[in-house]
Image (cartoon, rainbow, N blue to C red):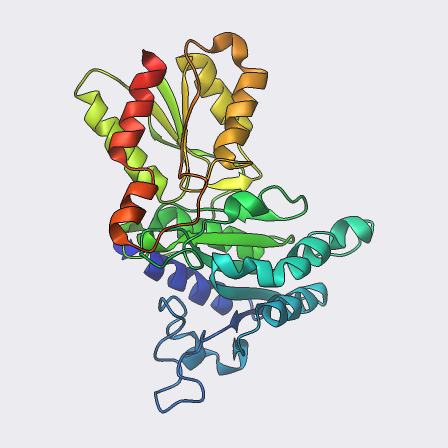
Length: 333
């Protein structure tokens, strides 16, 4: 297997899906790159370069759009209803509010409101999360918000291997999928197979295994939690680290079985705490594994505040290794 960054793994998945199925197409702002400018069209491929090269191979299946998220997602929804498999790109997850009606009141409801007679195999990709000092309007995770809506599937990969397999599953899925890519992880690399493969939705990954504490983390928090757990291993503390990979569907059984075995739970996410995934999973454990708990459930997340622009403030705002270690130790005290 080759070492590939998450950005390259996603790009490879798009190329392979388009080679295999001519109904797959890409649509979004700057997905071709340099459209209408002096540069060579197709040379950029999105603000993060994820769709580079697609226009050069399939110019009729790589649609560069104006800055209109509602139009992008509306076009994707309509195309999916008539048998196409669009992969729409919204530059930043923060802009999901501009196309919320198309996602929540249309795509998410089609199958239910048409009595199961329709399908909407559309994927919407987002760059998500903090760590870039991109300030309050370009740094939100947003997957925790979208997880609350039934009818859509929500994916949050934490590494290049998962990103490729999960995206290929998303493109093949007959329901709408929101695919949130932690942008600080685009350059992180790991071994990724060259061939096509899929990762089923609703199956969590055990990144670390241990006996003392269950740690559940999402997206860019997974490698931070892994580093914290590795440091604690030197102190004789061992932890399960669960990466759900998809928040809807959520692998509840993996989380509950681990909590029942360890008796302790720490949940880590970069999003603010109110009505978020940390609270949701803490509630799940309190409701269905209460008798197994040996200590308080701890949530490690950002403050209930917009993401600050200053690099120093953003570093203090986001969960980090010391905060995760402190939470693990606190639930064992």
